[in-house]
Image 1 (cartoon, rainbow, N blue to C red):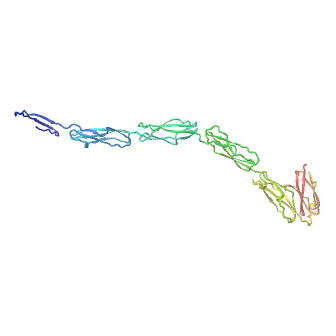
Image 2 (cartoon, helix red, strand yellow):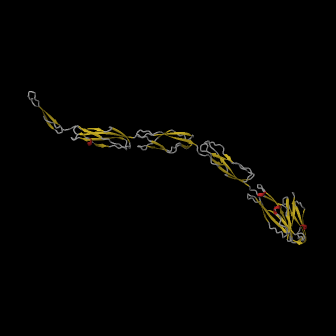
Image 3 (tube, rainbow, N blue to C red):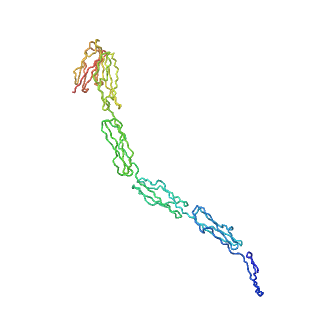
Length: 450
């Protein structure tokens, strides 16, 4: 008989009695049961793994823990997190500690480890072009790169390989990097093409504009060429040719191509073939017309030509003041210009307007004057025999109308012989003009070689 209340601390007596079939009763035996205080900790169990691994910057879901107690039974609702230093933004191992207490104050603990790891490979990004064209002879400096990592900062790739910038060719550089968690980036290769991409330079020898006379010889000065890489270049090509018989601005082009196929910019030389020679004009004998006759065609009394332009391209200019109604000796001035702007010297011709038939001749007339000897050499004489007294001047003109000699006898006279000193004049044809108030006469004079 007796009971034990295990829920309450204390001593409890249990009595044991027995009676046999004859009615004999045994002596009572007792047991003392002592219920002591609860000192057993609850048992805790982790839900999930005891050691979890997550990637950095990821979220973590805590599954928690369960607890049972020998006395109190299920204590899940009483489980709490005692400490949790987990930081998923930093690589490392962290501890989450759970605790529970039973009604007797027995406290249990259990911990879970959470390791935050970085398993993402870094990425290498090249700055600049790939393939990269690099100019030969220029020391190579890599444009650079950037390492992108999900966690680490300040990573720099290791570069292996070389570029011989003095020799054209294709070279490879290898970029590698490992982050602080041991994650290796995929190797990135930069292809560097060392090449000559610079055009040669052409320099003209001599001026870039040359002016030369038509029909003269052209001398080609040529050109020189330099290159950033080639020591020796082919001869500079000259495109075009100078036609020395053509008045025009003519263009010569100079180019060269180096061994890498780079063609220079075109150098230009302008050759101005010009005509700087004036036309030549020759005046014929004086034109004699009677008073009141139509004015003569003056262009028929000259011949003219040019060293380059045909006659139909030349322009004849005539200056005159002929009055066909007035007897006299008229000077006509001729010039010829060509399309290049060259103008001949002024040539002088003569037009003599005489009296009409049936009118008495003037005192100074063709029959009253003679020039002898004709042809002459060193001296010539002008003999004048007039019907009445008058004055007269003797003037000698070249065939181009230039006055070369003059004699002016003093006073009036009816007869006079004037001596002309011809020693200073060249051989050729001349005109002797006898002119006064009473008329004008022109005589032709030929001077021979002495």
